[in-house]
Length: 171
Image (cartoon, rainbow, N blue to C red; front, top):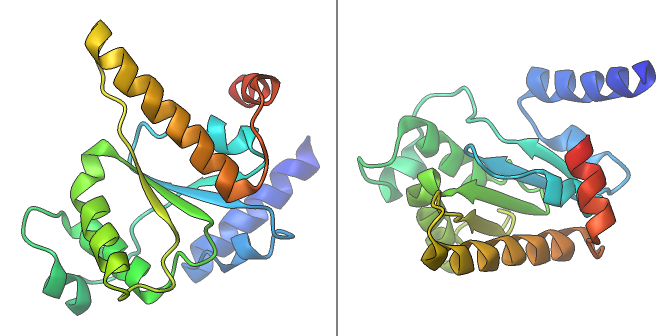
C-alpha cells in the first residue's frame, strides 16, 4: 500500500512542480480522464481502467486568447482553463468532463473545438445530472449516467461491467 502512495505522490508532485499533465502521459498509456468542477463521478473512469484526475486552473494571469472568445459571465478560473485547453495543455487527457456549473466553459470549448482552433484539446463532455428526486428527472439522469459510462468506455477502450463499478466505488 505504501509503495502505491509514493508513486501517486511522485506523479502529483511532478504535475504540481511543472504545472503540466505530461507525467500523466508517461503512465504506460493508461487512459486518463480529467474532470473540471465538482460532482463529476470518477468511479466510472476508474471502473473503465482509466486514471481520473481533477484538473485545476493553471496559476497564471488572465490570458489574451481566452479574453478574445469569452465574455464576462465566465469566471477568471475558467478563462485560464480555456486558455490551457486551447494551448494544448490538456492534450495528454483522453477525455475532459465538466460539471453543469461549468457549462459556460463547456460550450465555449465545444465551439472552439468545432471551429478547429483547439486541435490539441481532448474530447469534452458535460456531466449534466440534475439534483432532483422527481420521477420526471430520473430518465434524464439515467440517460446522462449511461452516456457518461459509454464516454468512459470509448476513452479507455474497455467495457465497464457492474463489478468494476462496484470495486471503484468501494475504493
